[in-house]
Image (cartoon, rainbow, N blue to C red; front, side, top):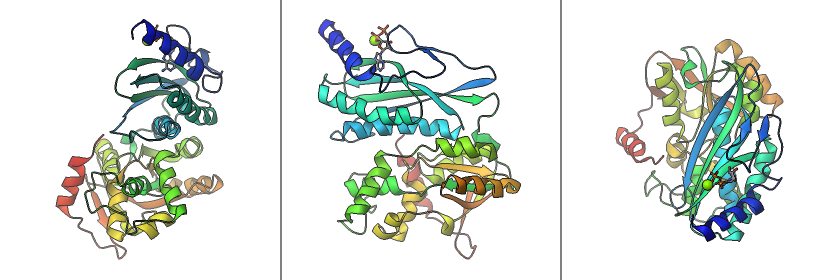
Length: 344
Ligand code: ADP
Ligand code: MG
């Protein structure tokens, strides 16, 4: 930035980013915002897990979106990646590209980040600001016991496949907002005017995804593999299968749906949203058959909704079964279409 730009940059850092709501003290964070680099202690016997996501205005969030919701979502999707590794959040850095130094946008943005950062004891420790088309880049750091991170590659035939939460709600939010999605023109709600409670439910599902940090902390030891569902169950489970060199059978009647998804959309679009919709940020994970009872006990202690949706088998692909156990042939063209059109 030029001189006045750099003045503005320091003011933004001072007012909105280095405030204690966001860059609070935390064990292991030796030095946060203010020097040329942050300094972090990694305790003996633990490893750092790192993940980054870039969100671009107009691509990953609408231009007129509430800055607080955008902030919340930007941090939540990063924390979700840590959950998928069963890592404990440690701290994060923030790269901001801003078209101007609009104080009201910044104020709302930092206010939207702070509660989630606090909740997961994950302070902001540094970053950078530059001018240009608005985008947000967050890198989170987490801690795992040495060798204990859950990878995509650990699924084995005989394991059960689980998902947390409900599927498809965030994609249905996009349909409700009237935004074009990769699911095509027919991907619409059956009612143009969903009830106030469904509207609120879908909006929150999109902007306030719940990173499954607690579930992974408590039950991660039961997981043989895990991934967070960011691109839809079909594609994300396939990543586990590719990394683990196996296949899966999935029972379509076991897929979990919210009450709002059940009432606002037809069967076909509900299934599309679940399999290809993305942005859900629940976990898909596999569990050895002899640990499922333990997993389900831990899940119910946490009041975490978990659904067993199928099995890992020999093979390479996903076979979908209907409620009678008969194979379901999902339209091959639709598969191609959804898979190739999906933005990252
Ligand atoms: P440098 O020029 O050495 O890269 P900067 O002047 O960009 O440092 O930043 C000064 C301090 O403010 C650094 O500690 C940096 O990490 C922090 N900082 C800059 N931008 C951000 C941001 N978007 N979020 C959090 N901290 C930031
Ligand atoms: Mg800089």
